[in-house]
Every structure is written in structure tokens, then in C-alpha cells.
Image (tube, rainbow, N blue to C red; front, top):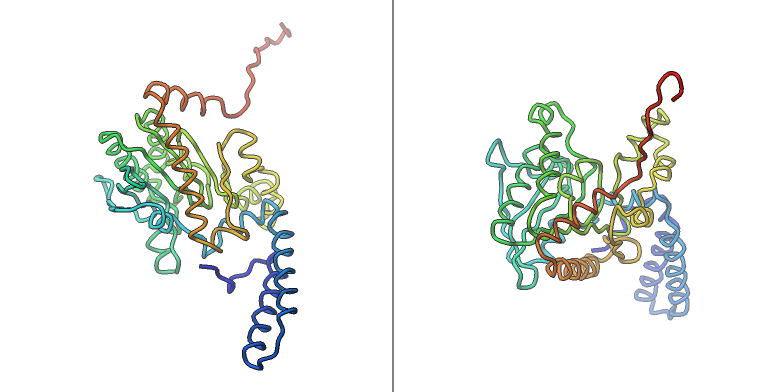
Length: 329
């Protein structure tokens, strides 16, 4: 699954070494010359370079990895983690929205409802999926499936991967903000365990619309933010080119998200990103989901809902100040 044709700027030193390694292998095969010592030296240098690059990523570099075009998407993880997935369509009000996929499946032998935001691999698929930006009917479809899960006592698992909800005129006319608000309200009282994983981008209310969960997890190269770095840069710096500075200022990388209690767990990815090893990434993710659900299923419904309420009620910091009159009293 590894892709070396798409190279991010900070990965170029690594790609040059990998090209040298490929050349050495070709020389060895074609000329029958023993270059094993040179190959070992390059392989060692590649490993050291990987550690240097991927152990010291900036917030902006993680954003770039979260958007890697070969990164596993929701349907990839669904295929690798679950069995018997049956995709269901439509919100029963307006239309189908392919930017959100979902349906019942089995996690090992347990029936669950799995949902996720889905991007496309090429232009045609991206137009179909609206680049992973859901319309209001996508959120209404998601809520319809979650209510179905509650009816049959099935845990809900959601995968977040969106730059944000679609901001177009049609979406506004059909009340996208209201659709997200209803999901936030209704997910907060859903009487089954909910686990959310941010697998790539987690942008604003577009992400939160399927992320009011008992446990929120994030892959180490994902981000979860109230706004994209480009959007923040355009507002505060008046220049989208300031996105790297905005990414640092937003503190939305996994270590800060966990520190501030926005996410509960950070899931390790294969060295270099999930796109380098789909199977390993899915295996690690599945283990985290199974572990989380195992703990949540031990709670009574009342405790489950109470803990969920407290979790989101305690996010953030605020202060009440007494109003003073003009006399200063």
C-alpha cells in the first residue's frame, strides 16, 4: 500500500535515499555485482532518516500527512476491520449524501453500526463524495442510522475525516447548521456506547456532527480543530500562506488534544503514516476500538449517559464575572 510517487516537501531527503536503494538493487540484479554492504548502509540511513523526520513533525506537517491522498479512508478501515458491512443510503427526507457512509457490520462477532466521512481517490470520486464535505442530508442519514442502532442495542463507531461540512448555498438552504446541532443534541443522549476515531482531518462542526462520543480517539497524524489552518490564517493573518503558523497556534495536534481532554486516546500509526501500511494501521485501530467498547459496555445506561454529559460539559475553561454598575459597586 506504500506510495512513493506523492512526496511531501519534508519527505524529500527520505525519497532520495529510497531511490538510491532501488538503483542499488537494480545494479545488483543486472550486473551480478555484490553491493550488499552498500545496500545495508543505505537501509540503515533510511531508518535513521525516518526516525529523524517522523519523530519531530510540526503541526503543519501532521496536517499534510492527514491529507495524504493515499491515506486510508473510512471505507478502507471498514473493509479491513469489520465483516458483513451493509451500506445503507438516504436520509428519508431529501436525498443520499455519499460524503457520509454507514451501515451495520460485525466487529468480530458483535453487531455494530459503523459510520464515516468518505473522501474520493480521484476527481470523479471526489465529486461524488464532495471531497468529504457532507451536506445536511449526510448528517441526517447518520442520525437515522444511529437511532436504528439504539433501537437494536448496537454500539456506534464513527470515523471522522472531513475538512468541514459543505458551506454551499444549497446546504445552507437545507439548514446544515441545524442538522449538525440536532446530531450533537441527539448523540448526547443516545443509549448505546459511541466510539469516535479521527482518522485524518477533523474540521469544525463538520467533524463534531458525528463525534459526540463516550470515547474520542485520534490517529497520531490526524488533527481535530475548530477551523482549518488555512481558514484561521485567512482570518487572523489575512493570508492563507500563514497556515503553518496558524497550525502551531491552534494547538490541534494529538499531544495537545489529549492534554486538554479533547480526545481520550492517541493511536500510533506505522512509521511515516498510515498510508505506508494499511494492514498494520487497521490492526492497531481495531485493537483500540475493541478495548474501548469492552470498557464502555460494562457501564449501565445511566452511567454511560452521565459520563458522556460530564465529558463534554467539562471541556474548555470559562469564568463568571459579576457585573458592576457605573458607580463601580
